[in-house]
Image (cartoon, rainbow, N blue to C red; front, side, top):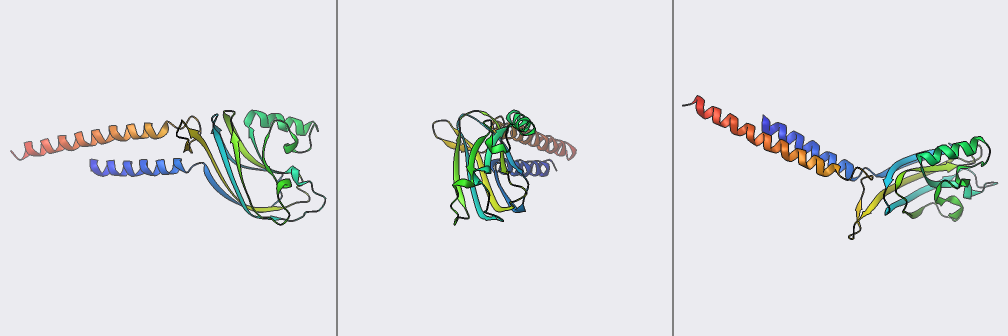
Length: 203
């Protein structure tokens, strides 16, 4: 029974590692959406942060009388976002993408009229917790459809290997592994105790 419990625990442990390793690779389908703000994901970048953005099947309901520089993706910290909301409420700006507090990743103004997809690599060197957000500053005129795949990661050390765990969570796999070793040791000890008692009973 102890061995069975261990294998159940170990399976959950492995599954959690797989989930964590792919936690910051997300896919989302947007269909005929006119929301002015669409939040996608949050991630803690270090000084070597990277955002890979792959957007396909882009369909726009309207291309007239729209400045597509005001339609697109940006990164923003929680603190900065509060200030952006204040700017919008005070009419200092009319679009979140106009704020100097956000970091533009890609705007549809860079998209060729005949293109329905793009790939973008954004380098983030300011460590902080960021949210990836899509802004549509023409919610009354424009509906957007698209498939969005985002991958956020930090580059590790000299090897430059990708760490898909948000800053502050990179130690979790080692913690889980340590606990699995402890549990494994306890399981072995428990099996040993049961075995010794069984030998005592049959004497």
